[in-house]
Image (cartoon, rainbow, N blue to C red; front, side, top):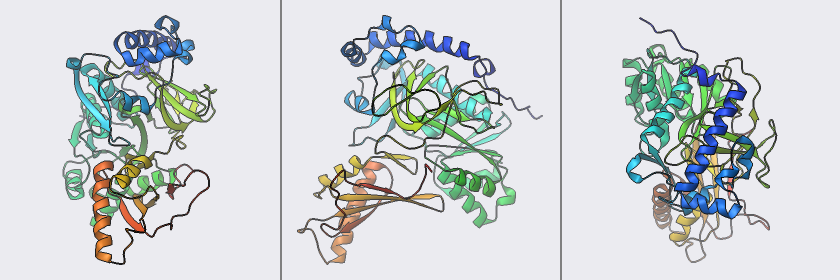
Length: 438
């Protein structure tokens, strides 16, 4: 017997009044600041240096007093310096790639995992998922948060969950057809690739998908329409960061006028990326998150470097939590390619370690909804050779070294000395042809 679709996973909190949300946030914020100050020496020093004591932060109005936390802090404190509970209370880690090999590690208690799964279950319900659905999770598993988050949310909701992970498209399609997958969770570029593969194999009439939850990389509204048309689904956006918890920090409802942030767990601010000044609602700036429920890794005023706009205008879906726009760009030099964070500094580290000068250019493009990553690398005059075999061998060595650092393949092209255009100002390291934020 079919289960009637619920509008919300946790209706009381998802539809709480703005005053109720502010009260929840204020109470949890004060407790989180006190807990972090008492248990994390790294935070205690930052707060002491800023002249802020836990007693100074009693409500949302005091949030601006706290110092910011950045990814540099996470690297400096690696691996255990920001842990707020005994290691014996932690049951899992998730991780991102590091800019110079030093990864960012996030720790989770059992309760942290439960709250994360609840956030993902909210996203699934907002996309129309019920316990009768078959949720096809084709995000990567392992250290990457994508697979684990939606997997846990689907279990919590009671849906049949297919832990497919990424890749092996033949197997993906076999299970999609044989088990009747109805909700697809993956990166938008992989969804587009699956759609192309379905069309090539003539399987369109055998696919039962009705919705897709796509995230981990930037995608345009045009790409959304293409995926929806080719798969016959409604495509929903989801947002998250490994440092904060993973996917489910924010998600789209059926109205698709921005992503609702789970404000009972995360406080969102928009700041001027240059001055740090908190900006009024509706202005574009850098997104900052404060985790008010996380036990193991409760980041306070963490600068995401994502540029976006917040809106508290009422949503016709009935959810009252603030909405964030799709990210409109970055305030740093990070790229997201095939769902993976890529920093120029990672590439520079590999080149220097292999004896190449720091003269390179990164070219990112997207053809047929699939990202490509090409790296032009200048040789020194001593390296330059007309021997194609030697050149191919050198390029292959760099390809392998970069894959070990980045986790994805980049095509390397060795070029002649001084052939990459110089700049009198900041070097133009990145050429991104994808136009993702237009």
